[in-house]
Image (cartoon, rainbow, N blue to C red; front, side):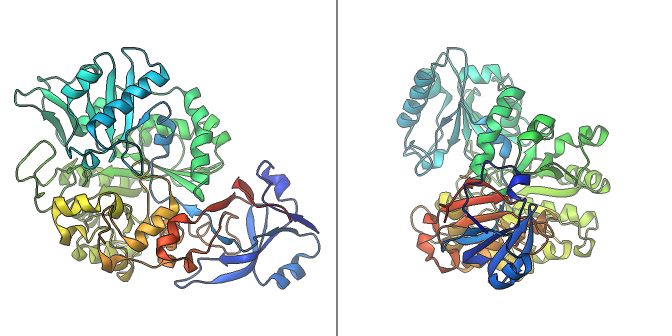
Length: 560
């Protein structure tokens, strides 16, 4: 017998699995069933789980050829499954500047934001005329509680093209040089489904939201294939470091799809990657598919089609049945937000995708956008018994009367409980405490029999899986206010939203999300048991190791 630790990260899958490996010596939470169940030992071989049960039975069944991994009291769980993020953004952020506010970044006021950009330009020696891209910009966290203006940016940076991407990824603020390069001027007509902020003279003030922002972003310089490949290793390492063994690209344009399905990317990807193609790419994909939907090629699968129905609640572009208390992002009165597409257009596009047999994913934040999603799915005649599993991403401001409609259709909601911390106070101010307290209603959705998941929407919030667990359990805002006490869940339910819930939503429940014989040997090892950790300490749990297909891809324990 050979005792080994987790120092096999550099080994090939074949070498690491020549003999069966026994894991024991700590809590092994299998995620089987609706109540916690622990196993004493797990045996893997060939990247697959071969045994789950008592240690003595494992030793009897597999004889003396077992390699042994001692957990030393650490807790073993199935590998975590990303319910929604934007992996492609991790490939784009290199070379940008973090404009986030604490605890995400250093910016707390307009002067600090300008100083941060200036320091970045000087540190990187960015030449005049070049683009400078800032991430995580959030006007709600600035001391001035307003958007930075084009005038302020022009005064500070007359020689660079400045783009500050809003933390929601549904808006941006540009300086004059960037607006000109993007073809936006006083003569530019308003874009349906978008907002071009204007001053009293009708000149663009730098603020672009939704479709107006998406149009401008097409002018940003794009990384080359070589640059993307160089960034891929760091990107998947960031997911592995959080315990993820399955990542997502949640709104892929053709450039993303071609890259992630390319031979070069597939040769480097060790994490499983499922891709939702943006609905604008559907005609191209149906005419010239890069690979069949729903089938794995190495570690890559085209999962379905993603529709964007509205915007962001913290940016005040989510679509509500009632108006925002303080108007729109550019001072609009009686502002409900705006849908990205109208109901008839969504119905027609969804029918095309559904008719092609594709899984439907819909971004919907406001309750009116959720109504649009449900109405469109009902028009298609989808019922839960059909097992089509449409997913409404975010489902943030969901009314309780919408839950039975989800259940009838078989919708899996993917919630975003991090909002309760980062923007809970903002939501209370924008829409009132009653509506804000109902965001991401995990308790009510589970009671309705729905398969729920929870996500980070990276880069909107960080890839921090323990923070996500905590936000689902605590629902506490920056100011310490509890946002929806009755929707707090316990640790096991919070873990289900990172394992069995997203596995079901991706038709992967027979491959991953549990520790069970025949499933993939995908695991995360934590330094403490979340089921026994006080809520306030959940965030400080550490990822000790991540194991994909039986091979350690992050971290490790010392050898015995």
